[in-house]
Length: 181
Image 1: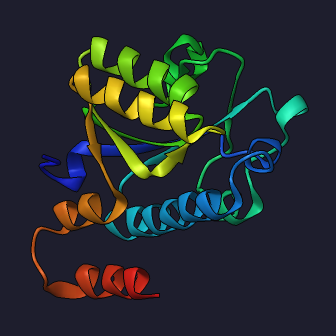
Image 2 (image 1 turned 135 degrees about the vertical axis):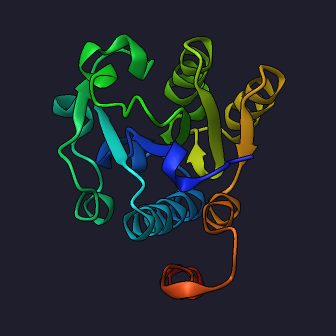
Image 3 (image 1 turned 90 degrees about the vertical axis):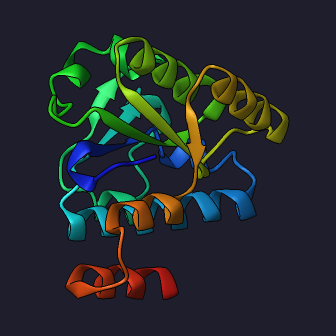
C-alpha cells in the first residue's frame, strides 16, 4: 500500500512521440489520460515527478500534452533501465522510497527499471493503466512477471486515493475535479 504522498515519487518513462505513434491508438490514449491525471494530482499533493526520454534524437521528445505539465526537463538515457543512467539516480528524492512507474514500454524499460529499483531497496508500483507495449501480449507478460517479482501492480485512481486517504479538504476537492473530468 502507498502509505503517504510524502513517501512517493513518480517516474514517467519514455512517453515519446515516435513510440506513441506505434502504439494501439485507443490504448495509448488511456495511458496519456491516466498519466495526465497523475501529473496533475501529484502537483496538487506535492509529489515529485521525473520523466525520461530514450534516445530523443531517434524517438523524439515527450508528447506535448505531458511535457507541458511536467515540472522539470527530461532525463535523457540510452540504457533501458533508468537506474543504468547515472544522471537518473541523482534526480531521485532519497527520502521518498516509494517509486511509481508509468510509461513505455512495459516489457522493456518499465520492467528493467522496476526490477533494478526493487533490487536497490525501493518499494515499486507500476501503473497498469499508465503503461503499455506495442504488443498486448508483451504488456501482459511483463505485468505478470513484475507481479511475480513482488512489484505492486496498481492504477492511477487507486494511487491518488491512497495519497488522499480521506474525502475532505481542498486537496480532495481539487483532485476529485481532475478525476471527474
